Image 1 (cartoon, helix red, strand yellow):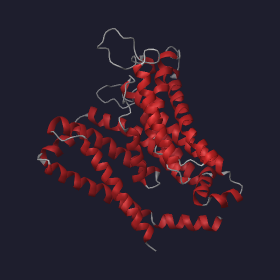
Image 2 (tube, rainbow, N blue to C red; image 1 turned 45 degrees about the vertical axis):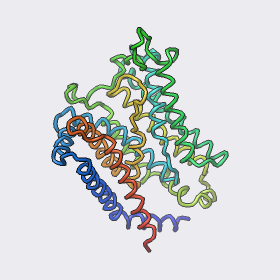
Image 3 (cartoon, rainbow, N blue to C red; image 1 turned 120 degrees about the vertical axis):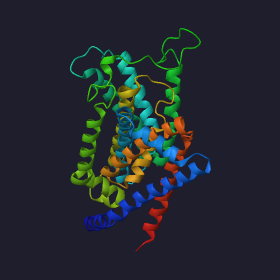
Image 4 (cartoon, helix red, strand yellow; image 1 turned 90 degrees about the horizontal axis):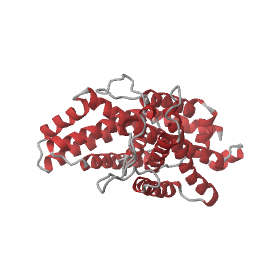
Length: 359
């Protein structure tokens, strides 16, 4: 098994540069097709590009908003890469974000943490979000181990359940919905206490990047080291490469599957906590806004690289911000951003098929 794994590692390194070029090419092709679609719907391409740039780089606030979005994408993407190293596909980022947001809100509002000292008011809700996401993804791991359920199906269906659970929480006054004073009261939670909100790096709300950014960078570094320099990473690769041989070498397939999905879920739940405590402050229906699926695409685009996840997350964060501004200023539907992301996935899938057929 060792010789086979070393041979596989050499092949992976040999294909590293073409893989990077394929990812870049996928983004370029999708972007060009997006420009063509903008032209096809009758919108001035120059006006759309101007609005896009204004929405991403036009002000410190726009840059900070894009970075904050990228944090969630990066965490979900890193979780995807870790699970994928064991040949698992975690598509449940959306549900893991949802349960993380629910847990963070519940603890921030009703956990009695608001008056605690030394950063505990926001650290404890983040820990609750992490644990919630870990438990949610572990359900899929247990189903796979015990009854052989495909993790793609289970994580996807668990996402639907989590989204409806979120809807129930913000619609029910008995759970997290704020007290109704009139029929116009919105279905959302109370705003979390100020002490539970994530501190800003600059302290300036004109550039509201929060401490989630350095935390995510640290998580990315640790994740990269775990995958490339640790026994855990070797065991994940062994299980993904050949579960039978790994079992004969004393590596527990069940334990590694459960660990991989639990870590991926924990990062997804943490992403939900960062979103809720870092910039939204109120839990509402649809607060995750498809971030879990964007993080999945970032993980796909990265092609197994944690550094690639960070780059892809920044790309999608700025793409989201630019898409919102294009709709407001130039009249370009934000759905076009989703179309571009879909084109990236299709291009990557075709390129992966081409690489797989090459000798």
